[in-house]
Image (cartoon, rainbow, N blue to C red; front, side, top):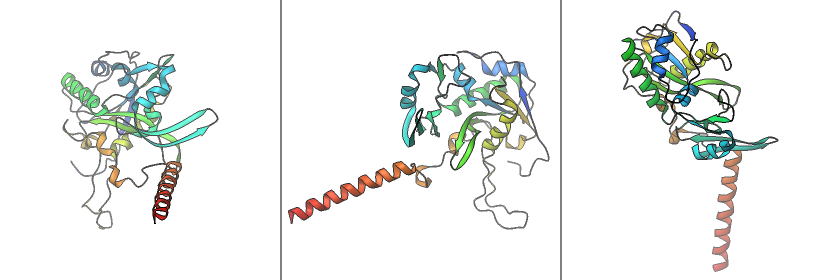
Length: 265
């Protein structure tokens, strides 16, 4: 990948897309709505991919859907309106409610995330490249909170045809000092920037980013799943309450075991 920083780049929201329903050909719809060129990166709101893939359930089943999509509970807190669950979902993403969301969903329904966001991004990138002949990258974005910071931002949950990291390890900074850990997650940075033109209620679910073509690459590059930190390097594997409860249970079990041994002696 070519090194260097873009002097400028642009982000444009793509309007005019119809309401997306199950079976919609998103690649064709996007190609019809804008002109694309080599090096363009499309940032596509994951919700329209979920709609096209039929990832819709009844709103009354939302809590069960969250449970079904959860592989690990990270933290939960009871509040006046119910329970907030921060979980790891089937896609490896850690966030609230396993990504099950009612926003921008049809009345009475909620949307699940795509089964495999990287595969969905790859299919879109493949289709768009075939239709246009343009070497484009694709990011699927979703809105997530971040530990220790208020508010939310869009992050990349799927990616294809682009480098998700700008790996600067082994190079030097402006002062000539070696960089050993610097690896900006450009997929997340681009997803967050694109949200500024897409918004949450504007009806613009797709943006095209121009001027960052150095990050566009082959379709077999690692996708957004590679952004997830492996468990063995996760210093915050569970929430504070869950860690306390686990420690309490372990301590209780240990005391019970010691008590049994003392009685036996």
